[in-house]
Structures are given as structure tokens and as C-alpha cells.
View 1: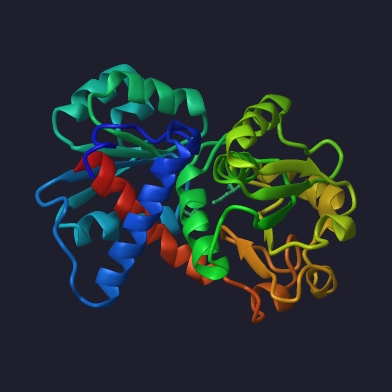
View 2: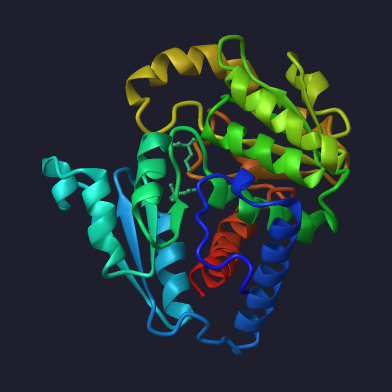
Length: 310
Ligand code: CP
Ligand code: NVA
């Protein structure tokens, strides 16, 4: 686990394809060991600080349980309680926390804040979701796709929904790992051009592709995976009504799923809204792998922490 020691994880693009493959292998090993009751204390005595400016179920609990399972400790830090909430700078906070901790995970709004934290911290910083990216989720999703389909390269993934943090990180993951990604969003909700261009550049060395398709029924043709996410992300609560109107033709319905490959899987980072982005029959049906995804957050992040904090 030496080569990644000390590194930050602010976006999937911070790592190479080879490094991601290595993390996925480590995650598979850690998962198998946990199932066999043979866990090793790879981070004995280490402490992870976990800063949250937004709500969380999976990220908080999987990081906290994960560091504990590796022999370390997690400290939950709400920005409401930290002095950040009263105006202490990110830079000062980063320098102070670096004296106590062995790693910091942060969930916040702006990617710039995470970058500033990482620049000023002498310990690894992990992005636990910003408005721009959600790399830990996609690391776990890559593990899930590999388990489910036996490969990453050449797998057809269709993302239907908002061009948000999930779409951006899935684009980076696809570009890095050679996945054929089709994105289908309503007009006006495309991912930012710069994110698309950067992800497309990555496909040159992986053989993957990133395409856009307007019609949901066309977008899912030949899909191995259909992926969706909420229509209104955290921080967009006041746009909820407007977004339901804009997105209502982009629900993943049983009909849409039937147009993908017969063995296609349904994925969602959760939390989900049944009857909005996905029909209950789909997310609760036999092709859904959403809880395997959620569990894999634990294993993937344990591999990440062991590699960068070890
Ligand atoms: N998928 C995900 O990050 O879930 P939480 O918001 O519950 O952490
Ligand atoms: N796009 C969602 C993902 C939640 C895990 C959000 O940012 O709220």
C-alpha cells in the first residue's frame, strides 16, 4: 500500500487507471477478509476527521465504521460546531487539524474549499462529496460493476438524469477505466462542457467513450448498467418543483429497463425518491444492485484509507 501513501483524493482523476485497479483489488481483498472474519488492523491508532456541511447516511457511517474496522478512530465534525462556522479560515483549520489527525474526509458545497483544505493540510484529504464531484461513490460503483459484470473496460453504462456531481464523477470514472458511457439529461441540465472535455481526454488511453443521447429509450439500448440519481441535489431544495417538471420523462421505469440488455443492472447512489427518478418496481426489483453499491462504499473506502493513510 506504499505507492499511494500521503496522497489526496479530491477527484477520481487524481489517480491513474492502474492506481484505481490497485484500489479495487485491495477493496476486494478487504471485503473477502471481512466476510471471513480475518480483518487486519492496517490503520491501528490512526484517526480520521470527518467534516460534514451536508447531511449523510452512507458516507458518514461507512467511513466511521471503516476506520474503526481498520483499527483506527473516526471523529465526526459538523461545520456548524467547528469554528469554520464562525469564520475561522479553511487554511488555519487545515493546519491545526493536521497536527491531530492522520486524514480528513470532507463533505461540503464547493470543490474549491476542498482544494484549499488539501493545499494547507499536511495529511491526506478525501472528498466525501461536493457540488462538483462524488469520487468515493464512483470508486465503490466501479467495484460493484466489476463484481457484477466481471470487467470495467467495454461495459456500457447509461446515466439518466441530472448533469450533477454524480454525472461528473461517473464521466471521470468511465474515461479512466474504459467504460462506454451514455449520458441522457433533459435540455438545460447537461454536465458542464469543461467536465465533459476533461473526461473525454481520459478515454484516449482507456478506450472508453462518452456520448450524449437525447431520448431515454435510445440511451438505454445495449446498456449493461442503467444509473440514475436524484433530480434535486442537496442545496437545490428550492428547485425541487421546477426540476420534477423538467425531468418527468427521465424516470427509470420498468419499460425503460426492459429496453436495456436482458441482464442489465440498475444502479443509484442513494438516497432515492421512488416515483421521481426511479419507479419503485425498478429499484426494488431483481435487477437492482443499489444495496450492493451502498455496502461497497465501506470496502472501497477502507482500501482508499489503507492506501493513502497507511
Ligand atoms: N450516496 C451517498 O453518498 O449517500 P449519503 O448522502 O447518505 O452519504
Ligand atoms: N447528487 C446527490 C448525491 C447524493 C449522494 C446530491 O448531491 O445530493
